[in-house]
Length: 139
Image (cartoon, rainbow, N blue to C red; front, side):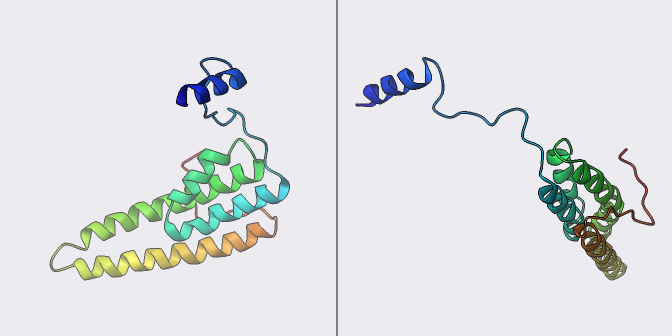
């Protein structure tokens, strides 16, 4: 019975073709609303650090110009505070001054959250956002 299924599959797809087909190499461009949606999510992702903006930038940068621009801006803004927060969270384990680093890590996260949400709201209206203080490491 398994051989009959394999023969049937070979006759449909041709010999040597897998049952599972991959995704096309070039995905479709984003629509205007999808472009704005992913750009907004890149900024809102700053609540979780730089990882969401990085993923959106890597996946969607070639599919939508607004998403490419805004995810790069969000990534450039969220990368330094994320690194600083990770370092502060590691330094929490120092016996005497660990509590100070815990407060610093919390303040970094609160600031990053506030700026990211404000930028996400701005971008959701369809307007590009530039952070006032941004290192722009990624060109």
